[in-house]
Amino acid sequence: MARIFAISNQKGGVGKTTTAINLASALALEEKTVLLVDLDPQGNASSGLGHPKSDVSMGIADVLLGFRDLPAVLLSTDVDGLHLAPATRELVGLEVELIEAENREFRLRSILRDHAADYDYVILDCPPSLGMLTVNALAAADGVIIPMQAEYFAMEGLSELLRAVNQIRRGGLNRELERFGIVLTMVDRRTRLGRDVCDQARAVFGQEVFDTEVPRNVRLGEAPSFGKPIHAYDPLSRGAIAYTSLAQEVLRRVSGESVEDKDTASTRQPLRVLAGGAK
Ligand SMILES: Nc1ncnc2c1ncn2[C@@H]1O[C@H](COP(=O)(O)OP(=O)(O)OP(=O)(O)O)[C@@H](O)[C@H]1O
Ligand SMILES: [Mg+2]
Image 1 (cartoon, helix red, strand yellow):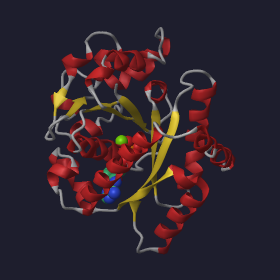
Image 2: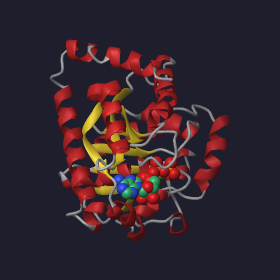
Image 3: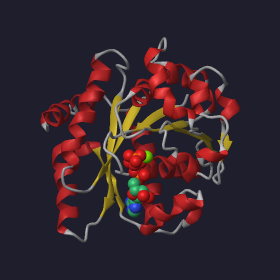
Image 4: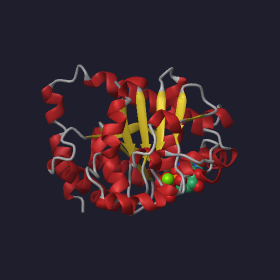
């Protein structure tokens, strides 16, 4: 059964797509079968994997509208075992069309359930908003991974997303949705600001923050223009090493969960309260 992660933060430009592409690629290189779903009308994950919107005729929008089956729209990538459900221009209008649709919040969930046996991991790249596409992602996901750019005001932006996650859970759209982890991105530990923001995030969110910090790395910025994940573009770069390390941490957390007892789960509660209070 696939484990499904939504990569989400309503703040723009924090590293969602970079994390979606390169975490997916790193998981595939760990011998997992991975599907990346591009839910952002900008289509950056699709172009970053070599399939720009302008070249793609069918995508996830057609599947969400019931015109195509998921396998019919899938594309291969430069990494074995990593498949892409691409964004197309139709995704722009879909946000509006879904508002009127039946079962509008659960479209993606039911599609992914039908194909859950085909993948070990499904990564959902969300747009920078909390609209219907993000709601579909959060309703479908087992966990949300939140990229947080290491800069001032990053923490304040998080409270809106954490409230939305709580609403999805409490409102019954997805009671099982887990806050799987926060990943610090574009980190520059040479600067005081970079260090301070990371330390503050760890103080507030504790174990929720992944040990791996993704450094600011020029190669990560360059790779999408070549349509390649960092592991295909420059496998020895600091960015590639960081995303491999993040994938390994994700795998450890996933396997640790099966032995996690209720006491450990309950120690997460104070963190949630604290985070909810960080408005
Ligand atoms: N660790 C990094 N080092 C250097 N550049 C990075 C890094 N992470 C992301 N970038 C660059 O920063 C920009 C924003 O990153 P990205 O597109 O991943 O963010 P996003 O949250 O998906 O944005 P949006 O909200 O628009 O979808 C991109 O140009 C990307 O190449
Ligand atoms: Mg993006």
